[in-house]
Length: 133
Ligand code: THU
Image (cartoon, rainbow, N blue to C red; front, side):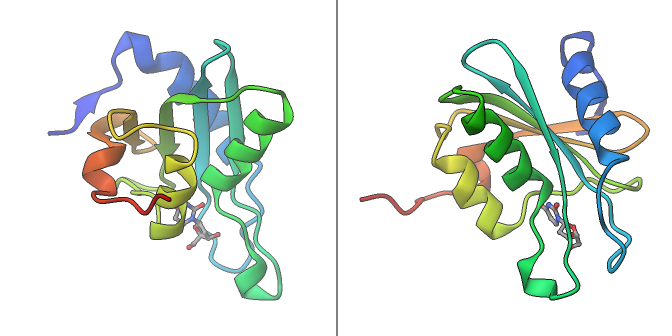
């Protein structure tokens, strides 16, 4: 069940909400913000970046992963995704796999609405039987 943002999740929620405003989404108008709490204790954020050549667009989660890896952090401890409306925005299939590269099946994935309702699932629930080699 969705819950109001718990105080421990407030910094992650606020970081995702802030970066959501920077999303470049002129084609879908669907702005997404993502914030990762990483193993180095820092927060890394990203927004979606669309392109006139539509398939080249990048999701918010991928932007946040890029920021995390670019700063030397290695693992995702938690991730928050803020939707642009009152419905949560679960990560797309591709982003579930991208998150799995740096997170475990137990990693919490928080799905927030703009008004601060949060539903938490594990990455394993979102991506069971993930591909691995
Ligand atoms: N989008 C994300 O940023 N994350 C997701 O998990 C789902 C979709 C973006 C991609 C595109 O820019 C817009 O939302 C509409 O699909």
